[in-house]
Amino acid sequence: MSILAALQKNRMIPEIYKQMSREALEERVREVKNKLGSKLFIPGHHYQKDEVIQFADATGDSLKLAQLSAENKEAEFIVFCGVHFMAETADILTSEQQKVFLPDMRAGCSMADMADLQQTEQAWEKLGEIFGDTILPLTYVNSTAAIKSFVGAHGGATVTSSNAHTMVKWAFTQKERILFLPDQHLGRNTAFDLGIDLDDMAIWNPITNTLEYEGDVSSIKVILWKGHCSVHENFTVKNVIDVRYQHPKMKIIVHPECRREVVELSDMAGSTSYIIKAIENAEPGTEWAIGTEMNLVNRIIHDHPDKKIISLNPHMCPCLTMNRIDLPHLVWSLDTLEDASNLNLIKVDAEIAENAKLALERMLANS
Image 1 (tube, rainbow, N blue to C red):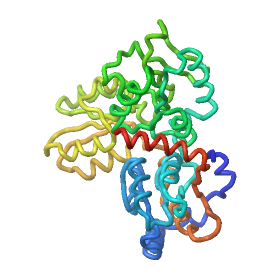
Image 2: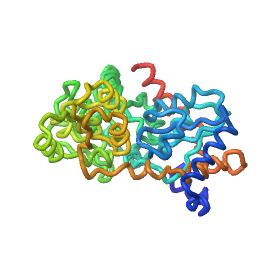
Image 3: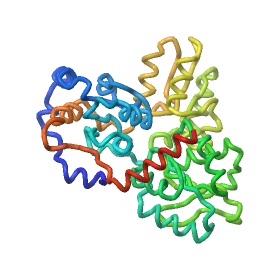
Image 4: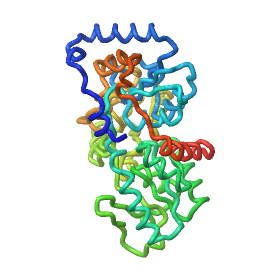
C-alpha cells in the first residue's frame, strides 16, 4: 500500500493527543507497556527523537530491528518507530500472527520514494535492450517492499550499509554488471572502495528514463539509480574544509550515503553502527565531526561527554520524515492496538512479500 493510500484509509491523529502534556503522554506509554507486557514490542530506529527512543525495547538500524521483531515470537503487536519501508520489512519477516504498526503513516523516506516499481520496470526493459542479460539488481534496504520484490524476482538481493561491500562482491560473481537502487552515493562509494573506476559507473535517471554516461557503454560495470538521502546529501566539501580549518585535530567520520567527494575527504566512513562503535572505542579527549542524522549525533554527544563531538554540518536538521513519529502519535497507536480498527497497520501484499523475502534471504545467506 502506498503512503498516500494509507493516509486515505486511516484517519489523522485526534486533537486530544496533541493537547496532552508530555508527562501525561509518557505515563500513558508506561501504562500500555505494563498492561500488554511481552505481547508488545517497540523497536526504535537510531534516528528517532529522544522522547520516543526512551520507550524502545530495542534500538538499531532498520534491518536489525526487523530481524529482532521476527525473533520475538511472543510479541503480537509491533509498533515500529521508524519509517514506512522499515515497518514493511518487519511485516515481511514476521509471522502471520504478528501485526506491525507505524504510528504515523506520513513517516516515509524520500530516498525510498525515489524508486517506484513502474520506473524500475521501465529501466529494466531499457537496460536489457542495451546490455542484455548481464545485469543483477541490488537494492539498499532503504527501499519499498515493491522494489525489494522486483529485485528478488530478478535474482538480486538487498544490501545494508554494513554489508554493501560483501554484497557487491557477491553480485559480480553472478553477473557482469549491477544495477544499484535507490541510493547512488552508497553504490558509488562501495564500488569505488572495491576498485571499480568512476569512469566505469553510469547513472540511470528515472525521471528522464535515460542512461547518463559518456563513452563506450560496454565498459560500464555499475549502473547507479539517481536517488539519494536528503539528509546525508546535505554534508558538503565546504563542511569538511571548515572543520579542517577550525578544528585541525578533529577526525571526520561520515555515513557512506554522503557524496563521494565528502567521503573521500573524510577520515572514516561507515554505517550507523560503525559510527557509533568508532566513537565508543575512541580515546577520551579525542575530537570528532560526525556526518549523519542530527538526532543520532546529539545522542552520541550526550553519551560521550569525555570527547569533543560536533555535527559535520552545523546547520543540519534531523530527518524530517523520521521525526513525524513523536509521543502523541506513539500513544495514539498504542491506544488503538486492541480495537478492531487496525489503525496504521502495515501489511505487505503476499506476492510482493514472497519475492522481497527472497532478496532479503539472499543477502543474509551471502553476507
